[in-house]
Image (cartoon, rainbow, N blue to C red; front, side, top):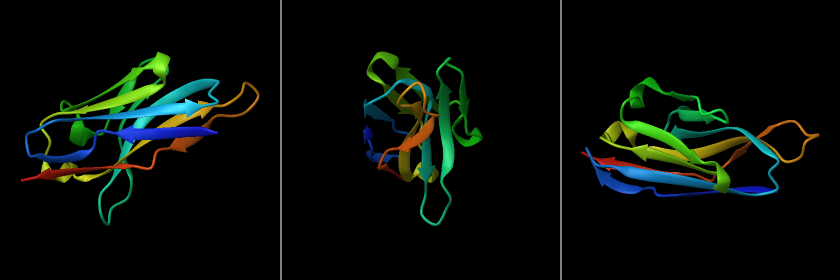
Length: 121
């Protein structure tokens, strides 16, 4: 079993910053990629940022230059530093790990339960 635990969400004023964390625990053989997604009310879940095991990153156009994804590989943790927050960033943020639990199993997506980020104007 793999568990992802997110932390760091909350309420912040526009222009402020928050840092999200997501730690994975359990049986992990290897991690292909880690990422953050978000879902606003009445909208589909969308990719915010993703980082591969090799360190390459990609970001949604709406957050480029404001958000930074990073990892602490030794601790199986991924972070999302969010600066210059806007009201339209308000959403539930979910972390995602694409990982293998053993060498003979294919990689599977695991999701956190989500953390609320609310940006007031």
